[in-house]
Image (cartoon, rainbow, N blue to C red; front, side, top):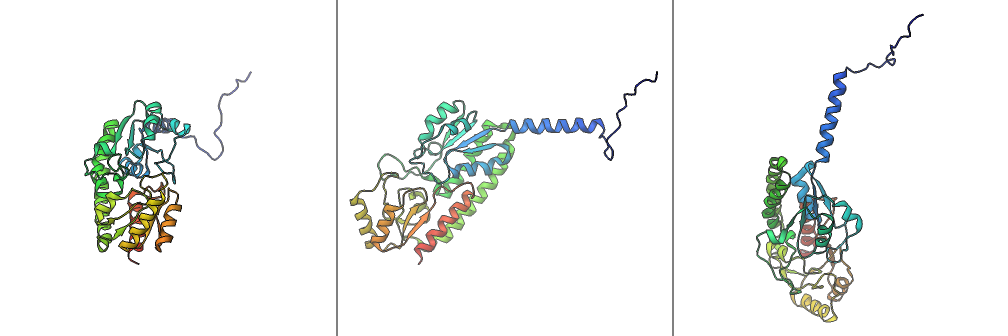
Length: 300
């Protein structure tokens, strides 16, 4: 009897790659899959810090932002899904003060993460908050302070991922240059407004005002999330009229109604600022957009 052949013909029109090619492909997939799985998870409570971390880390870390777009850190309540998203995080970057809600979340969901609190580690000249609970925490709205923060973030990332430290340092150097140029650009744009009366919605802009020479004469909502009293509103209206302030500024994340009342009564326009931004824009572009809005409003 004729023996049955075990030869299997190749598919017509296709050639089987040599075995070494398959081995190489498999090795590449294994290497890149392992590298992807090994990327550290880095958490930031606020978009400005999440963006700075992304600019430093590039694709060598997975950056998770806790505060959703459009939400206020002053009134935010974390969800169970966010606890799951930060499980296994290597580093958590908090601002301090405005994001105290993240403390318990991190302690329960990412107990082994390194916790970096910006206002505890950054050297800066604090401004007292109007609600008298301590230093005003809104330091990210001064780009010169973010220049000083960048090497601290580089150091923190390098501590949790020493293998990629050289990449972090190189990206951090580029970010530092970019932030210095941003600060110079904004200073030039704001120079003609030095000493101009500035009325933001709440006490979130003192470091910005100090950096660029604005006279912060009043805040409509002294403590974010707390409705201003009729007395506070009346005082804000009187101050605007007395100082001839040209605009009132509300914020994207907060209820604009009190600011609308003040602006209408004082006879000035209401202009919206965004102190936090979202994933669609970089920190640099966020600050440029705010300065552009302020310059247009105060030079009319």
